[in-house]
Amino acid sequence: MTTSAHPATGASPVPPASLPPAVPTWRYIGFLLGPGVGTFAFNAVTVILPTLRDRFGSDDVSLELVIAGYGIPFAVLLILGGRLGDRFGRHRLYSVGMGLFLVSAVACAFAPSVGMLIVARVVQGVGAALCTPQVLATIQATSSGAARTRAIAAFGASGGIGSAVGQVAGGALAATSFGVVDGWRAVFVVVALVAAAAIALAPLAPRSRSHEHVAIDLVGTAALGIGILAASVALTFGPAWGWSWPVYVVLLVAAIAFVAMWRHQDAVERSGRVPLLPPSVLRLRPLQLGLLSAALFFAGYSALLYVFPRAVEAGGMTSLQAGLALLPFAVVFAAVSLTVARVQARLGDATLAWGVGLQLVALVAMSVTVVLAWGSDIGLWLQPALVILGAGQALIFSPLTQLVVREVPVRAAGLSGGMFSTAQQIALSFGVIVIGGVVSFTHVEGRDELLAGLALDIVLAVAVLVLALVLRARGRRRVEV
View (tube, rainbow, N blue to C red):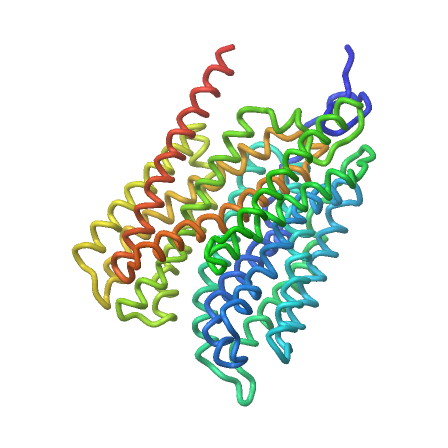
């Protein structure tokens, strides 16, 4: 029997390895705090922006930089962070990244000006990019079967809980003060405490790294970074710049960088060296469909979460009430996420399609409810549909993640975490940009703004359902062969 080197990793011939053991999910607790604190930081800061405007007298551009200062370096460095974990060890990169996250959170809490807050948020984005890919990579490399499914489901539950709690806590703390200390600063104190807990608990997880030498492709890294940076800048500041010609120049730069990166990666792989993004992996059709499905799902998710608080606050709810209205959704999402392994044992590859079906039922029910019961108590009337939405999205997240993870060789596990998180971050920004453009163009607000967000999410969910059915059909054919 012979083995051959894998083009994605440049691995030397090795005998087939046994499957990793069934690692209990609790051992990943330190790593699983990462996505939770990351989404908490993002959503809580989004909610406190009006308070920052009042305290610092900030303009719209400065407030956008508070968000973009975190999001852009996060998106740009995710794939590099994953590959660095492959080379230097995922525990090491996770601790370094979370350490930066902790230090930057403290700096944010004590920031004397919006300028210093923006600088600290940039450092926070770098830290998040270094630690986030290590979570999925470690789960992929150190677990298998139902244990891996449970850990990936917990990964999704952590992000969902962090998102909802961030909105609630941000609204509550923004309206509070602790003596002479503004409540918004407490948001970053909470972030720092959770980051410290994540660092302390991280050693519980089994250690992993690539067993082969992973070279860092500097040219590919630079080209990919320029492409993602240009695309992120264009998508983030396009609305503020009125989609004028500089935006399209930046998008052209992004396109050129991506084409150059692809050609370079192809040449590197053909030469037998290790590329940053192996074309042989990216050409896998299930991986392509999985990443596209994930991008569409997260774009719809972000669009709906963007318009929901704005719309219901226009209908008479406070920021805190708007956040509390989403709390049952997050609780159900978390609870169902932790049972996904059992659901998948019964439904198999059909789990994703069932999840999207539930999501569509919930979105249609929300639309009907908004039309018939709009008012200051709309948050209460929406609860049944939001509960169904939480269950449906939980059945979507874990299968989508597994689609991406299982197509990437374990020796390059950092690549899967980086690719999935990059697609997620860019899609989250894109969803907000699209719905923001629709709202700005149509000048809708309140009920009509929420209906616009629901309509966009329904369209994207239908596309995800089609892709889910295609993926299921491909899976059946592969099994038959």
